[in-house]
Length: 639
Image (cartoon, rainbow, N blue to C red; front, top):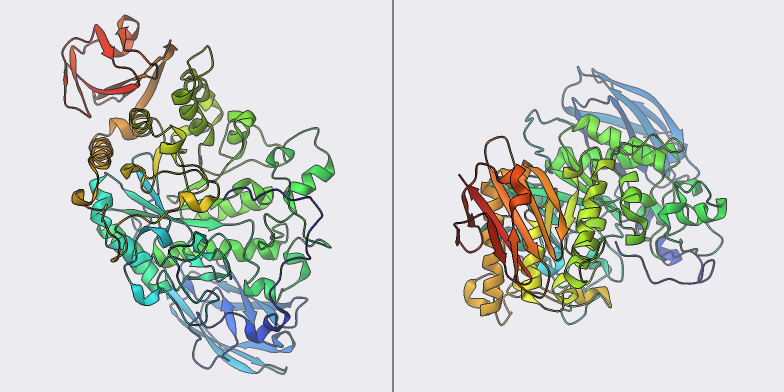
């Protein structure tokens, strides 16, 4: 998520809340939750159901109902399930229920009876059988090629869910960059074949959980219900089916999550369980966005507080994750989504903004239950902060700092993004231009495993790479060749393959609809007939590289060796023990270069020729190679 426009600190309106009339418990957004039999209409329990067979036998239910705190709870005898007690919170409308579910417990329904207070009700709480399919959650790794998209802007497969009764935005308006446009899960499903034709193996949509905010709700990063899919994308059950259908098509699914904050229309904020569930300020206080204050040995307490306890934006309340009850609520929620859907990985928004101890607890709990789960975090910091700061937030070789030791498997590698951009837009120098890639990768020693990092060229918060590169097709091809041959997990932002462009001023300009995703569109760029010759050429270039990568393990899990750039030419190799070797030569200069390859002997020995992957051209003599200006050669070596 992008840093919001800066405003004076400690200024502005009071903490953003919904109108007072909506702050009552009765107005909590329960309409999207299927109420169990015999439950009062205004009652909800999070998690909405649970499973037997989980590694952690403890379960904490958050019960929300008017006046529920005064009620006495009894649990009908259920073999293997023990009621450990209840806990009141500040609000009379909440009650915590603590349960232990032993390994002997069987699926069924727990009969909960609330009596003796203002609220008297019976609730049948469902326990399901945990999946025994060990391959269901596949994980995300360097064998994958991720396609990142915004569901609302990709394709509208079901016009009937464009407007859902009861939501705060009652229309779609494709001519507005802040309105919803109608894209949905069904629209993504209808284009699985398109994604597979690019060599894509994993789909990363922006958050699909309910974002029932009155403005700019399409992006999903201000969630208002932790346990439901936004109905304008599809039902929660349809989302689980979406994951299953993706798997059947050989595609993994990454679930985009927000740990640090929520939307101000979330029922947990409208009717707060307790004041200490959120960081509260007398007036709206925007943060300083300086994650370096967390591990800066000289940071002032004020600067650190202004990063860690302030709000990300005026409609995004900041969660007090140092509260163990908040920690537990979030951990259970994200375990719930994995078990319910079988999703393959989490992308964590604004990762450094969360409480450090919480991040360790959250990561451990998720990986204890799902060791194969893929996880990578948004570690967006400026280029000047460097690789060390990015590695600090990822599993690294450093000792703990103030008790924090990251267990996040991979980072979103912003530092490499800056490096490839500089390589293509700045003349080569000792450490500048293309040399920036070399020196950025040299810092990989700080990661436990840099191949778990996600590498990318742009995203929904940044200017599109085609525009950043001056709409130079040759530069974009070099960037894409690098993306699909570099170490790590490559991510392509939707539409890059058809030359979608624009600068993020404002963000909506880089979040345009994919042409052809709506039946009324004048052209359909999902088909060759709907693409211009230049767009078709770029599509084929990505497809050629993407499908080659998918078929050749050397570009997925192979080792990397690179050589110090000479002038504008940077050469690196991907190789493995099975005898596969791919040589990549990038010439980012304005003139053709003839490269003497004698200094690459340790990787070229035994090879006599090669084939350039994107063109199919033979490379008959490896002793010297001509590399045209602003070109990347991807050469499969032959013996």
